Length: 206
Image (cartoon, rainbow, N blue to C red; front, side):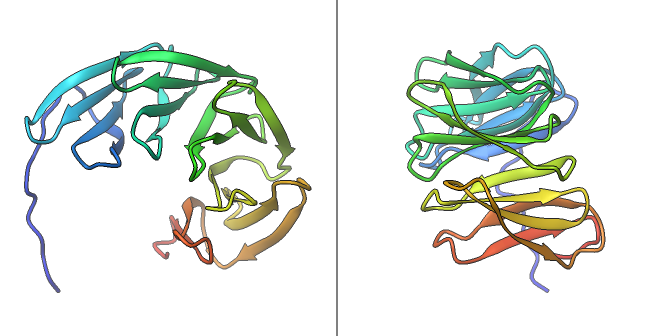
């Protein structure tokens, strides 16, 4: 087995790291922790360069837009927030979910956001207007995360019932349910070409 050594270690003012995501150009990364702020770090400088403040409760996921100009975050405060990375300012608040939001992800073209919440809904949002454009009642209980396929036609979600589920965006219909894991699924993700889905679980399998 080949072992790798860390290139750099960054120490920040937080108790633990909950989310960390690279910018698309690889020059910086965003971090959220146990406090409701997002920190952006410059990799070359090894220092925090921006702080995004606005959420009122724990931040559950963060992601850069495909062009790196924006960050989407979601929180237990029931909001999704869009941030302009260059000026480190909040530019939109997306509201509609009635309970804590678990994940929010950009589509591959950056024009749409897909989110899921403890209110058992999946929602699609238009980035330009900030408006909700679609809602699916999952009837599956809590989903760990959701993601849009690269072509924007299919949503994949992982459930606490150890299933992976696909929905069709235009019809809102469930396409297929995959069984196989023996415990709670932590995350699912499409391959870049959209032909495959990878999942990981508490059962130690992927």
